Amino acid sequence: MSLLSKTLDRVKPSPTIAMTTKALELKAAGRDVIGLSAGEPDFDTPQNIKDAAIAAINAGQTKYTAVDGTPALKQAICAKFKRENGLTYEPSQVTVGTGGKQILYNAFMATLNPGDEVIIPAPYWVSYPDMVLLAGGTPFVVEATLENRFKLTPEQLEAAITPNTKWFLFNSPSNPTGAGYTRDEVKALTDVLMRYPQVWVMTDDMYEHLVFDDFVFATPAEVEPQLYDRTLTVNGVSKAYAMTGWRIGYGAGPVQLIKAMAKVQSQSTSNPSSVSQAAAVEALNGPQDFIEGNKAVFQRRRDLVVGMLNAAEGVTCPVPEGAFYVYPDISACIGKTSKGGTLIDSDEAFATALLEENGVAVVFGAAFGLSPNFRVSYATADEVLKDACTRIQAFCAELN
Ligand SMILES: Cc1ncc(COP(=O)(O)O)c(C=O)c1O
Image (cartoon, rainbow, N blue to C red; front, side):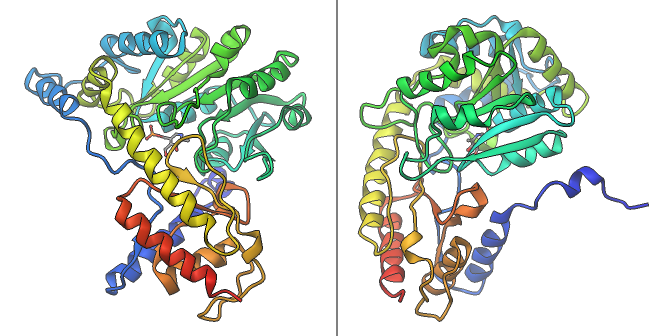
């Protein structure tokens, strides 16, 4: 009898791990390596949030809490949805987990039966397809194009729907492209969904607050209120408040779904950290000026990186609406050979040679389901970004 489960056979090991391991090895060997692969803000958590956590510890809030969130946090989440998204949820419609990641996972575990399909637009966040597989469902990946700036069209969505479709998984602004759907673009997708009442919407709004220029964030249940009864709206404090290590995410939707998700959590991890929940209450209820300050910094970095990457030979980098990633296309580099003699026959070969020869760690596009591209996370200091982009320019200039 084999030790490992058959379910695990369906899941791919993370293709990003090889790159990260390689970068660490080179660093350990004394090489000068710049990492542009981290998916987290480089800012520290704001002091008022830290203070709230310390106060919670001192007040003895160090015990188990209700399985899927304290009443105080659920209230704060309801207030956030009302204030920022015009969505009315009762605390009974809200569930809190250990990061947005657990919320997504709970939702799939609670709803997927063998044969159920989940439509996932590519490029996608690396975890989506494997979470669906772990939960016993079938990912149905639809590739968005560079021409449509990495956004799924309503026609593509409609063509992907089958009688087995259970969820449409939506993520705007997106990891890895930073692409944000305008209100009209969201409406065009929700119009399609209105014709298919069996399809539910899981919207991952994790990067809601990281949007630039005059882009206005829009979420499906607010854009099309008739979808409210079959939408799970997922969000969290990780990206907006620089709280990735605190592990708090949340979802809101119909009570039946929320209860089922809480059941999954009750028999797996139980409540998210009591201290982190107290911190999240302060993040949502406290002053919000941190978000605006962050946005300005990220927008400046985005402009710097997009400008420098577009100046690299063979690289086309669309300007994203949000998040802290860019996803340049490198079609024009494929088939060339690097200065070190590597044939660039894939985005993985590009990223590996870039790391080995010029010391910049990025994540290759195949990890996100759309090639040939690579993802740069610009959540790092301007000087580091300039250095990294200069190295990428040099690497591309030397391809032939
Ligand atoms: C698109 C997207 N969704 C969800 C998450 C999960 O966030 P967390 O579990 O830290 O709340 C991430 C984190 O990288 C993400 O990029």
